[in-house]
Amino acid sequence: MSSLQSTATSMVEQAPQWKDYSREEVEDVLFKFLQKNEDKSFLPVSLFQDTGLAKDLKSPFKFSMALTRLAMTERIYHTCDFNWFSATQLDDNYQLFSNALNHNYGRKMIVNNERTGLVHNEPRVPLADLKKLLLSKDIEAADKFFDGTTRLLGDDKAEVLENIVYFASYPRCGNTWFAASFEELTSIAPGSDMGLDALTLTVGLMISGQVATQSHDEGQWLMKTHIPFDDCKFPIDIKKVVLVVRNPIQAIQSQMHLLSSWSHNLVIDTETIKENDLVKMTRENLKPFVDFHLEWIKAARERKCQIYFFRYEDMCDNLEKVLTEAFKFILEVDSLEGTVIEHNINKLLEGRKKIRIYKRASKEGDKVKVVQKEFLHSIPGTQEVLKFFGYMAENEDSPEVIFHRTHLTGDMPFNKLNAEQHAAFKNKEYESKPTFKSSDLKYIGRDPNVPNTMAEISRYIKMKERFV
Image (tube, rainbow, N blue to C red; front, side, top):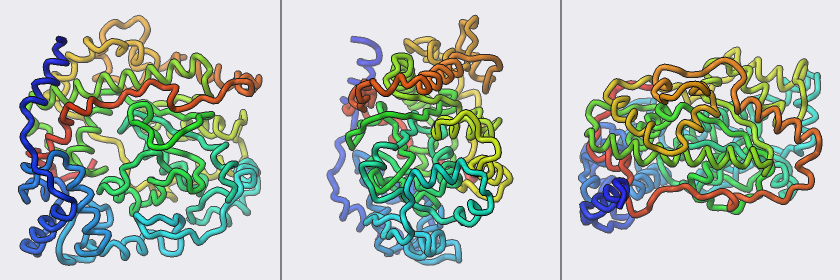
C-alpha cells in the first residue's frame, strides 16, 4: 500500500461518527443561536464552531445550505457580501435578502431563478447582433447599449448552446475574476455547470454581482467549469475553451482560505493550522491540480477543441493584454483595434467598472511553503505543467523556483500552442473534428471516502480580521 493510500485509510478509520441532522434541524439550531445572541454578528465559520455543529455534522455543506436558507427566507439579516449574519439589523450594512437584491440590481434582474427570485425583464440579445456591435467602431451606440444592464443571449437555445465558450480552471485560479470582467465587457451574464446552488459562497456571488453564476441553460455565452476536477452535472459538448492557470502554491493557498472561511474575500490565520492538516491539504490538492492541467494540455495538443491558455499572474500584471488576446480568440479575429470591445476594455481598466469580489491574494508565510516544497518534487507531472505554463524554465530542475517567481519572459510553450490553435482554426481544421465531450476528459475529482481537509480546518481555524 502506498503512503498516500495508507494516509487515506487512516483518515477514514479515524473519522468521528457524525450525527445525521436534517437541514431543517440545522436551521433550527442556527436560528435559535442567532436569536440568543441577537446583539452580535457572526461569520459562517464562527457559527459552525460556536453552535457546536462542527462536532456533529459530517460535512459543513449541509450547514452552509441551512444558513443560506435562513437568509433567503428572511428570518435573519446579512451583509451585502454575505459574510456576516445576525438575528437583528445591527446597522445599515445588514439587510434582508430581498433588500440586498434590490440594492444591487434594481430593475436589472435577469434570471428566472428560484434560488434568488430574480426574473428576466430585459430583451434577450441575439449573439450575432452582439458580436457585430462589439466588433464595430460605433462607440456612441455602444455606450447607450452598455448601460450597466446585465443581459442574456437570444431565445434560440440551440444557437446559444452551439456558441458557448467554456471557461475552465482549477478552483481558485482566477475563474471568478475573469467571469466578472467578461460580464462587464459584454453585458452577458456568465453561467456555471456546477451544482453548488445553495451554499453561502455561491449566493454571495449571486447577490454581489454574478447573478447567473449557477445557471447553465439560461442564455449564457461564457460558462464556468472546473471539469475534469469536478464531475460535470450537465452533459457538455465542447468546442471552444478559455483556460486560466495559476501558480499552484498560490492556488492551493487560496483554495484553503475559500473552503475554510467560506468566503471569497476573507482569509484564515494560517499560523493556527495544524501542520498535519497542512500536509494533508497540500497532498489532496497538488496532484489533482497537476492532473487537471495535463488533461487540458493533452486535449489542446491533440486538437480536440479550440483552447486558449493564460495565467492568473498575467491578469494581475497586464490585464489589458490578457483581455485583448482572450477576446481575439473568442471573437475569432486578429485585431481589436478601434472596436467597441477595445473601448470597453479601456473603460474597465480606467476603473469606471468595478470587479467587487475577486482580488489578488496576499502571500503566505514560511510555514506554508516548507510543507508544500516536499510535494513539488514527488507528484508526477508537476515539472511538465510548471514548464508548460512558464513557471519553470526548460533548463531548470527544481520546482522550488515558483515560490519567488510569478512569471517568465520569453516564448513559453503555452504561448506557442495558443498560436497553433489560432492557425488551426483559420485553416478550418476543427470543422471536420468529431464533437469533443466533457466525458472525453479523465475525471480527476476527490476520493469520496477521504474527508476534505480544508473542510476539517473550518472546525477549529481562526479568522484574520482583514480582507485579501
